[in-house]
Length: 247
Image (cartoon, rainbow, N blue to C red; front, top):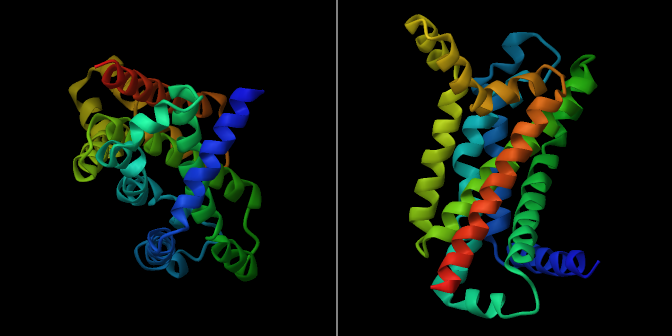
């Protein structure tokens, strides 16, 4: 019970820190503007003549590629740069509680930004009769994918006190996770005739597991993939922080 109280305290502290500066509001505005641009302009929402938010969700893996690492790059880099990480870890909390608390606060911030796209849902319901179940699944998948990207950003942030380096490394890792399940890449592997390699690479791609959510299907294997990725990245974050603390 005390562990959850510590996690809640850390999460509340971190979430409050986002909104004490204009950075959070700037991020949310940029995120909403880009969502509108990708949905209506690049996604050709009106030209599709289809009452759905497929044009909204299909670009999320690429949209999150830069925006989520921008949120997560400061999680531990800033603590290390300012020297407050030693103070944080000497408090009566474990490193794991601090990691989970900071991650949940940032994830909640991203979910809040995602929830603020509700005018798109209202618009598509006003213009037609969409499958709201599929839309709900799309939001669940987007939230899980954002959490996976964020956990990777947390891991890279723990590696260095330089936020720019943490941002670049996390973008590169997330980019490879996108490429692994991207159709042109899987098509190329199919042409090589190595089926097991194609299946292995595709199983590691976020595109492969996010596609079902876009179609309105919640598959336990896809949920497990994102949760496993989050767990592995946060575990790695803990290993990095404890190794640096011991050193």
